[in-house]
Length: 304
Image 1 (tube, helix red, strand yellow):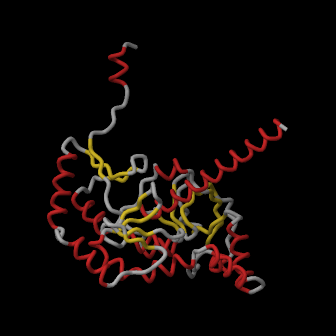
Image 2 (cartoon, rainbow, N blue to C red):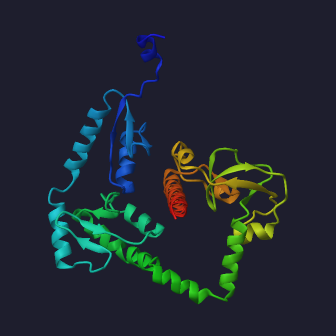
């Protein structure tokens, strides 16, 4: 095959442009209204808009968004913070923005994502909130600070000590034991598809099959979700998805309907997939660190 033929046979990347956005849902929702064909790319860590004129259209939209903003919003927010500051070990007031660093908490993430223009700085591992969004931050700060304090190592350790020997601890152990069985109840007449990321009440999983064993209703209601009257459930086995599988999973456009939640499984949303992807990255890093530690130990033994 000559070079010309080889070049024409290779798949060409799609035409389009990428853009980064603040993490707040309002901005993302407006962006998706303006660009319904836009898709999030975990590989690029940005939104991708297809089309030859995508870059021009994105630039025009961003300019319109900036024109809508109050040109004095940051100054007003900075003045408001100076007049009535938030004093917390989790918040620093930098000249250009407010910076938030807390222990990981899903509640913290959910609260900050509701703040307009807030964004995650991966390099410094902290959240950045512009002064123009100070009032929204003030409204959500009690929930953010309380969640951060609950997730401090000392607080988590104290809760474990307080639970020791109680019925709550026994219930927690029973729940953990059940999770380790890697089974999940699904309607006998409405099982989820296999080998596709599925949202459940225990997170996003990949179902691998079922042998038809009936799931008793008491166990379903105690550890998973309220069993519907008259519904028969069977146990289905599952596994966690790899990062590659989760990155390539296409999300649902809308959150699950009440009927899907009651059924026990649904097509996951983008927010659910992002959480699962973060967890998959953490599992991969932990595995890599374990392998590195084992390799160092082997080399040390060999050298000794």
